[in-house]
Image (cartoon, rainbow, N blue to C red; front, side, top):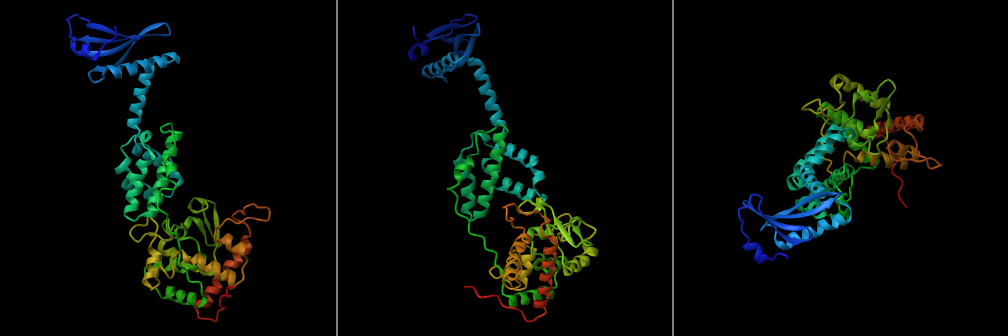
Length: 407
């Protein structure tokens, strides 16, 4: 006879040492003992008699117990032992609770550290610790959904106007989720659902002076600048080598061969992740030789003023330009690349493919193959010397050829 809620409430322990059992059908029964009322289910699996715990009454009602019985019988019909499935589910819950987003993210940080420069590693760690861990760090990574990342992390960054940071942090979270997927800790990267949900990033514009006469004024301001020797040298080299600001400030003496007049930047530091060679004009060699007695004993050509263990700040050159009266709307450290690109092409008539190669842009040959780092090196070396000589002329106030008017 099936049990009813009324009868279950009325059942009392009668004193039997092993308690009393009241059947409900399908192998399920209520075991009433001195300590309480327990739902159990008897079944056979692989020729053995087994018992499955379904919960404790009244926390688990009659209706809920019957649901669990039905689930167990479905597993049995599929050839699965309900007790084993229950143990696996429990272990999975324990594992999920242990593998929180923060735990997985910190493991990812350690295992992928070799792919990043130390300064980048520090930035990534700070972003996670400041903008992610406080909000989803304690959640099991397998339980986190797209809206958790969107509402708890991304929207908070957008609310304070940090749009670029919101995009970067979302990308970092995606990397952590993909690491969790291959580690068997998550089903998928939930941030892939957020592609259209983030506020648009403002287009990056690196202001640059490209008029030859104004370039001459800028160069004279640089040579009149009386700041720290490292800053002065970095300013003087910026227009001459026109690498990205991050590549310049992290330059290491081990990468530079003054006798060969070459600076070989490893791919790990480059945006395109490809090794890059910068031929050094005689003027650049002179600046670097002047720096050797000052910083040549350490790792970085332009070390931080506070500690030689780190390169100079990413804001140093831009701050110096601001101090000379060049606002961010007029010229930036990154703008030296546009200065070189424009004038070398439109005034000096240099080959565009050589300029693009020297800018470390992807350049392909007639067969569609990307040039390697040593491609056209002699020609690029001559071009870089012509460029340095031209800069000397405009800095000295010599007559310069104006830019050709655009059609």
